[in-house]
Every structure is written in structure tokens, then in C-alpha cells.
Length: 242
Length: 136
Image 1 (tube, each protein chain N blue to C red):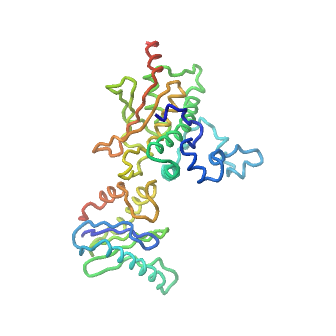
Image 2: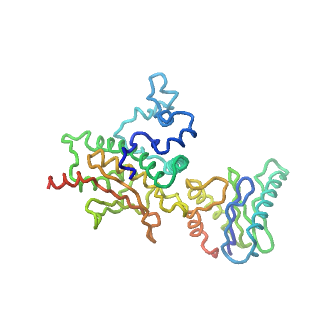
């Protein structure tokens, strides 16, 4: 199983596809993916166009959420390029899904940090979710709202396996314009979302393996299930807390 | 009033999408469609240089005795062609909506290669919902 080896969380380029990356990119992977360097006082204007009334992105208030939404169309184009870029550098659907998961993971770590800061930062009695059910509900409602602007449609517990939970989205915004060709029907681009969920759960010390699966029905052809398989340690701890 | 067919022609003159809706047109082989699309591409290039007053975007409607050919040229050079009956008045809005759907379901789809034939389920479904069987 791929997960037996250390998950390449913090490097986008997985070890398995290093050879293909090497000949495709002349630069090293770390420079390809590095974030724009934080602007120095002198260089700020040249990197981000900051007008008098428009502070640049590094100086914006973290708690200000109104008007901070990004354009759905712009995101759709970006995500489409991400999928195409990733697809060129992997071998097979599983590898592609794992890579998207890794990319989502990097977002998830930031989502949980920002969400906790916004919700608890100004609170006099900051708290942290420690119960499994409230953590899952938080993912279902707050994380989805923070990332997609709407709560997920359902959350279910697997009947057969007590360590499996499912979050269901009837129409995932990131997949709205994507038509997966028939020969790749296994692929779910929501692996990206699964990565976000995995990072959030990890960040709250609920380690789990999260995967995405297409579960279409006649009414919602894009319906997607995010399957959360919790690690045993989480369930053992839940027992102790009861 | 009826919408007979829809073509999408890429900027090189290749037919990347062709679909019939209502009956009423002579059935053609896929090769003949390709030839017609290429010819139309050439005619369109000529008509855009024929205008006696300044520049022109090229032919927009070709009318025959039994049908009308409505052409929408986008800024990127892709052409949308709608074959309709003479009485059809909604062609312009339908073409605009098809262009909307194309931008969403084709251009934002990571599995589509630009300038190649359109094989996107989302585009098929949404065009189907828009035009239906072609009868208004």
C-alpha cells in the first residue's frame, strides 16, 4: 500500500514520479513551487500592486472575510490547469489522485490554522474540539463553508466499518465543470477536497486516511463521497473519553 | 420554427463538434461535414475582407430557401454555427448561450485539449437541455 511509506506531505513532487519530473523540469522542484517571497519594504510595490486603498495581500486583515471570496471561474481555470499539470507528471489514476490529495493537504493545513484563528482568536475562552463527532460536524459545516461557501450535504457513518465516516457533497463546486472521460471513470478530482479534510483532521489530532469516490445518482450526476477512515488510535481514545 | 443542427469550428477551420437536433436536413457523412466546415471557414475569411466600408467581422447569416445558417465568431476565432429554419428568431440568443456553455463545460474541463474534437459529457448534456429536440 502506498500509505505504508511516509506520505510525501510537504513536498508536492512525490518520490514515485521523480524520474518523470526530472526530465520535464529543468529547475529543481523546490523553486518551482516556492511561494512568492515575502515582500521587503522596498520591493513591495513591484510584487503586488498596492494602491492607496488596497493593502497588499500580506497586510490584509486575517479576520476580514467579507469580499474575500475568489472568482469561481478563475478558480475553475486554475484547478483545471492543476489537474492537467499533475496528470502529465504521474503514472496512472491512483498516482494522480494521491498527488491531488497532497496538494489539497497543503491547503488544509492553512484552512485549519485560519479557521481556528478566526473562530477562537478573539475568544476569552478559546476551546479545541476533542470529540470525534463534533470534529466531523465541524468539517461538514465549517470547513466546507470556509472553503466552498456552503455546508456539505450529508454526513454518514459506515454500517460495516465503525472506523469509516462519509461526507457527501451533491454538487462539489470544484468538479462542476469537469467531465471525466470514460476510460478514467475511476478518477475523482475531489481527491483534492479529501486532502483538505485529511489535513484538517490531522491538525486536530484525528489522523485518518481520506479518499474521494464518485457516487452519482440520477438527480446529482456529480455526487461525491469523501470517505474518512480513521486510525485505530483515534477510536481507542474515543473509548477512553466516554 | 426549428433548430436543425449545431457546429463548432476551431480557429484552424476544423470541425470539432457537430450535432443534429430536429430532422429536416439531408443526412451527411462525417467526412462531408468536415469538408463543409472547412469551406465555410474559407468563405468566412473572404467575407471578412469584402466590406466596402472599413473592417468587418465576416458573414453572420447565410439564408437559403429552406434554412438559415447563423454564425457566431468569438474573439478567439472559434466559430459557432447554428442551422435553423427561416422563421427561427432565437438563433442569436441560443448561440450566445452555447458559447457560455462552451466556456464553462469545455474550456474549464482539464480533460479537453484545445482545438481538438469536443468529447465532454457536460457540454453534451447542457447543450441538450438548452436546445432539446430542436422544436420550440
